[in-house]
Amino acid sequence: MVRRLAAAVLLLVFSAWAVNIKLYLKDGTFNLVREYQVKEDRVRYYSVERSDWEEMPLGMVDLKRTESEAAARKAQLDEQAKSQAEEEAAVREIKKDVSRIPMDPGVYWLEAKETKSLKLASSAMHTNKRREALKIFTPVGPALSSKGALELDGDHSSNVFTDPEQEFYIVLSDTERFGIAKLIAKNGVRVVENVTFLPTKDIVEELTTLDIFRQQMASDELYKIWPKEPMEPGEYAVVQYTEGKLNIQVWDFAIARK
Image (tube, rainbow, N blue to C red; front, side, top):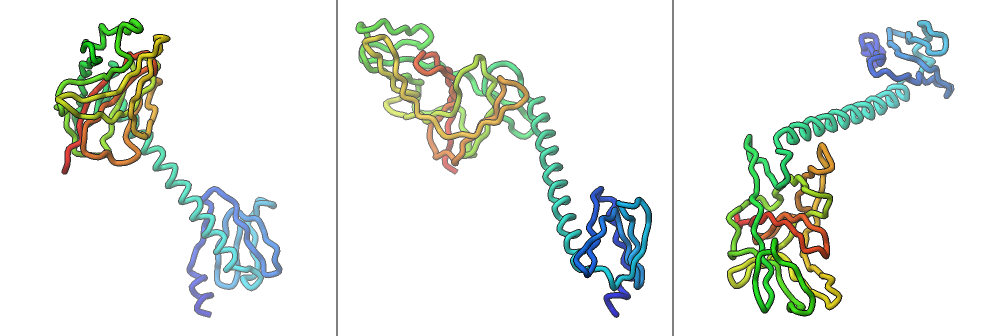
């Protein structure tokens, strides 16, 4: 009786969900309806099959099953709506970020309302015979040592971050590989990679890169990158390169201890 009295004042209208509802009967069958209302001892519903309002005694309706399935469907639709809203919010955030990143090749990060950029580092190739700037370095075969190292001056980068999951935006200057490399600081320099010069004049580069997430933004040139695992305190660089060509570009930074 209490349930029936409560049902008398309860209006269940599902048309806003824009889906059809199965109004289950106690004999196991169902009517496909657009919406229904419980009124005292009767159920009024809009029949999808006959496109008209109809009524039947409440005692014939399996209201519990009908409400349970309708509630589950509503929860599913709510979850879908939530996911869509989150996706749309993410798209808006991407567009917002893209609008803040210059389209000039380079590496950038966002700090509050300010867009900042990393300066392209000047690297040098160091062999046991000589050390010269990468931009003028050209291996000429056996005349050079078979081993070398690409280095940056100084033990520490002047670009220091405290966030071990620091995010960067890279605008590529060419269709090349890119990522975040771990550098080794020793003897007043930071080693970007070790290099082997083969007698065939081929070059083998040993670059230690981190596992990263890559999110392509508005174009093929702009990507957002960040490490899959928090970076340990130390020296790092965002790099763009073509393996075996020794044309690597380096934007150095450090992660400080908190």
